[in-house]
Image (tube, rainbow, N blue to C red):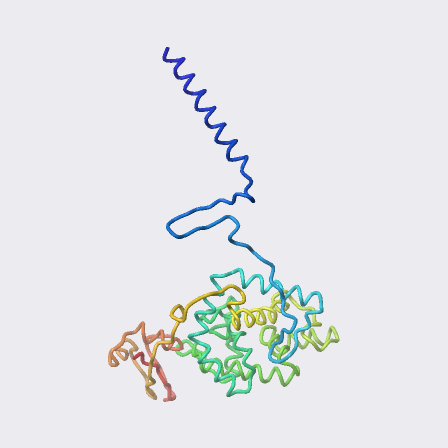
Length: 308
């Protein structure tokens, strides 16, 4: 008796499961989208679409037209727009950081006579962070040691001004101005910032061309200017590309004031305490100070930011 009861129960379970499976299979997902409801939240299976991006016809960089009628250029621009639009977390961090750092970068570009579009070069170089590349380039502008020193920055184990945003921005501007004078266009100056003056010049001469858009280079150089253009397009009109935020979501630069120092500082942590702050806060505001001391044997005048 017990075995027959178990058998009947098992057959009943199989029949019920079959009915449920048929009921699910008979539903057309396009006619009956899955709906998940929780309070006033309603998400449907067709509510999120990944769309191709329409490339603007009038793209420019630093006032110079982008020739998207060239098939390879159009595809390279398309790639960077897609990658950076759909890498939403990274693009949102770009948006948040530009509110904090562009007000520092923009007036320096204007003062030096470098087009405003070059602020987007810093975005794609470092994501507006003080990072170090595998090649040893550092800071927002990813300057190598030799290029930094050639353009007036102090670089050593104690002080590295590649991490000083204002000074590094001026040094990057000087590099770009020299490249513009050498190559004739801002687009080539941007490419030279990545490939180096010598590397780019060799390619142009060998291939007998004078435009970035006509030169064949390595993949990273080929992607470089399109990445800047994509960053400009997304950051200049983020809502067009689906990014929505409130002003309070953006990062703000903490207030600070400057203290002139023309002597050595034997202990940065003790120095910070004199101004009612601490070592961490002082280093956040002055990342160019690389040790817990400032040697300053030459009695140079430094200006240290003190958080308010």
